[in-house]
Image (cartoon, rainbow, N blue to C red; front, side):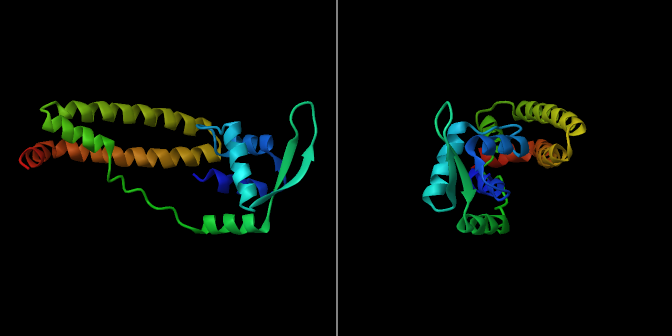
Length: 175
């Protein structure tokens, strides 16, 4: 996820302080990985330097001055371009799990156990996500669906690999 583009998009509704941006980000996108304040301010500094935001006001308080940021026309254009650009599909061609299975076969370990252990972990995570989806709002349901569909695809791969394990063992050990 592009933190900079996300913060820019949040600024389109109006100027905000860094604290407000962090809170809005965490509410909408950061359920599992909230932003650190340092990340917000370093990102805003970079966006300011690049002309995508401007300081809309500075407020003095008990602590450090609070800058209020506003998106510029260049920032709006940049967000629009980012939203219109499709994300590159992740083909997972460098899978750590595949590497573990092949190394297990090469070192004469039990690759079936690796697949079984991974299957159990996937099913455990699917139960957690299903429970979260059941209790969550629409945004939580959609993000959980996204994760669940990926886990389901992984489970299909685990089953297929388990069914082909003998052929894979032969292929990787005779090269």
